[in-house]
Length: 273
Length: 222
Ligand SMILES: Nc1ncnc2c1ncn2[C@@H]1O[C@H](COP(=O)(O)OP(=O)(O)OP(=O)(O)O)[C@@H](O)[C@H]1O
Ligand SMILES: [Mg+2]
Image (cartoon, rainbow over all chains, first blue to last red; front, side, top):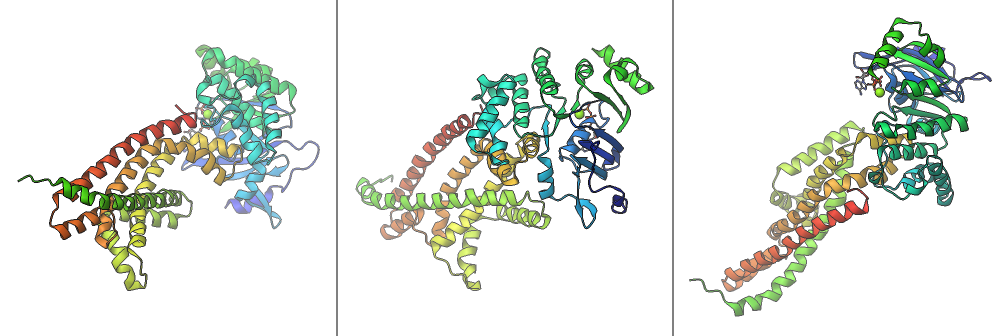
């Protein structure tokens, strides 16, 4: 069924205004449950987009689909002008095979709520694993790159520690360095501070702030920290029931929300904090 | 009534110690086969090719539900009817290796399943190849929780080697039987066999625990 409608989707996005990330009518279901419902979302190159919304509204699912951790049921996702979930074949789009996915995945990096560092490797080994064994960089170059990034996240002195010796905030900073070491064009952050003790949240958010300032990186971030989202986002999307209920500049969305559900959500969050 | 003869004991001891070498060799070779083949069986059950997954799972279940001694007989005596004629050692190593491979595959399966899903997801996000993900990320983490089970089966395979005597592998039990039927004295050879097994099993079990702790330390996870 979805095969015939796929001919409506372009094989490539061209032009100067082509977004870095584009969701086109993306639907995701788990069994009978429609988690994302014909989602359209563009993220421009270098843009920082924050996704907020109630639990179960599909925020994580958006990032996981982009990381190719989940397949999609309908629609097409594009990254850097090329289809991600599909590949061109005989003038049309067909579901991407593993080889194509591997090539496209190189554009994307992700940080997880629970860090997911490799526990049997030191901080720097975690960072070097991808550059050496995926990008094929010489060890020395990978080490230099990793040291620079660990320096940037303030973890240079812990480079030879295993994750079990690091605090949550420190582990998350190493995880950010590890993802950046692959030089992705798009970085995804899924509630990267939710598992942290309040007093160390700042050390992780400060790293993300730095990224906004120093790199021309496209970022999608899911967070429950409204203050942080307001500070650093170019745009905020409020998700509700698998759709974007409302989106806009942080000042507008937080200062003057138009939709009732947005207002309810924001006041509920304000009360809780 | 209790007439233990020390002279006889010392007379047969060298022969039994020599047979112990064969027992250790049988256990060692059988275990080496089981360790590698067990991993193959465990990984085969995780492929996305369903017929293979299903066939391997049934095979493992079948081997685990039938006696080892039957499997030894089967490989040795039924094989020739299909033109597969194997020496006792070869047949024995295949049977015991396969038997313990199916047990070890279950140990590995448990170990692999104990690795958090996030490790797979992080590997994918870093674009690591499936082989690299398995051999550098997942298996090293599945190893420590598998070691206790692997150690149990090392002692287990060692204690099961006497079953190879039924097809004439000249290990300890086979040699003790031979001594018994030559001299009509069974007390000393069987007692010695028991002592030798005990003298090897107990320290091995202790060493395994030390090794387990060492591996955890090497992998930086304790
Ligand atoms: N693997 C899965 N199988 C079935 N349902 C799933 C699966 N993953 C997610 N869901 C469902 O999809 C919906 C959206 O999940 P998602 O994780 O995207 O929500 P979220 O907005 O990130 O919520 P939270 O704020 O709690 O993290 C939820 O109803 C969830 O139960
Ligand atoms: Mg979530």
